[in-house]
Length: 97
Image (tube, rainbow, N blue to C red):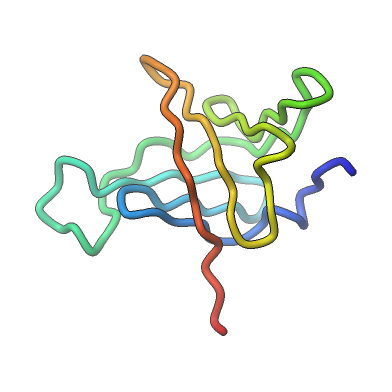
């Protein structure tokens, strides 16, 4: 089953990253190298949501984020940041429950 925008829309977080997907945009913030550890004050990027498949198994979420299709779940998503190097990040979906 192919991932669609509704499947990943929302707020995803880890100890070091906060990813927000909404209104066709992907925003990634971090608290790495900041003095405000509970907050994600440093913006890494804000870019268009693309949702295209590089092949049948890898979904390009935006210019700098890809995810293996098998690693996208309702509550947990594993992504790779394509920056100077490939950085694996495991994110948890924020819910109000």
